[in-house]
Image (cartoon, rainbow, N blue to C red):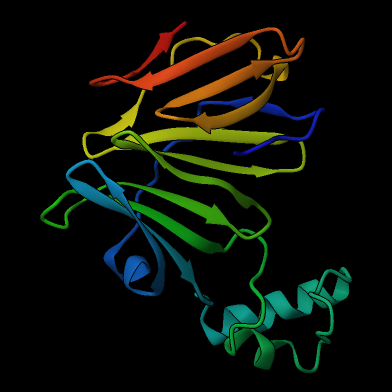
Length: 192
């Protein structure tokens, strides 16, 4: 079960992104979940900047005092190339939904600074959530693509998103409002 903090806002508006095959090949698959007649893979990605760009980013980060813990300006480039840290905004994880023949259907990026807060299989779909601080964005993916969510009201009113059985339960601010979502053909359907 996935629980959000009490003051967080959640919305089903996580958009898929485009990536090159080089970016996909640079990531190592760590976890695979079934997805109807396909699969969904979670991969972690290493450093992607060339040496000159990384050197420039190290200087900027040292000047702004935003280097990772234990990293100094002198050893920054060495630690970066070894994969001990990433710069903010770089892709640290990729979520790739694939059909049975291996062709990618949708891809979601998790940049450095954000967290993958939901990666859970249910029915013939998978719930994916990415967030930082008090803002969380969700998507439900199948082998057909991303399922469109019905209007759920103000994202500030959503307090809890959890998978119970084959449904996604969305709980509101008053804790009395429960909406159950089930995967349909091209969208999520509300079930009472």
